[in-house]
Structures are given as C-alpha cells and as structure tokens.
Image (cartoon, rainbow, N blue to C red; front, side):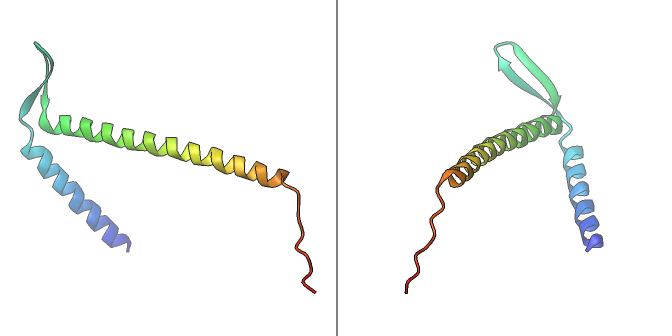
Amino acid sequence: MRFVRWLVGLVVFAGLLLLALQNAEPVTLHVYDGVGWQTPLIFLLLIVFAAGVAAGLLAGSIRSVRLKRQLARLRNQQRRAPVTRPRDGG
C-alpha cells in the first residue's frame, strides 16, 4: 500500500512539473486601466488555486463552528431537562 501511495504521488508530481514547464510563458493580469501584473502562467494558477483552497477551508470552518455551537446548545438543553422514567407497563 505504501508503494502505491508513493507511485501515485510521483505520477501527480511529474504531471504537475510537466504542466509547470509547459506553461512558463509570462501573462499579464490587468487589474485596473493601466495597472497590470506580469507573471508566469503557472504561478498565477498556483495563486488562484491556493485562494480557492483557502476560501473552501474558511467556508468549512464557519460551518463547523456553527455546528459545534448548535451541539453545545443541545447538550445544555439535555442536561437541564428533567429526567423522566418510563412507566411500567404492567
């Protein structure tokens, strides 16, 4: 299993390396009129990918915090609720 993991990692790394080498041409990102930023395409793709990952993690953490608060509230309600015992059917 460890060998397969290393093999998949090596294949992904080689693919990304080839992608980076083939997309090394400089591109210009125009922000405003007359304001631009010139950088290699692969670097720009890396920045956009990292921003997407960060946005996804932020959205997931916000949901996680919301769910943890709801769970804590429900646990507190359960502790405060009076204990009722079921009646004996006989």
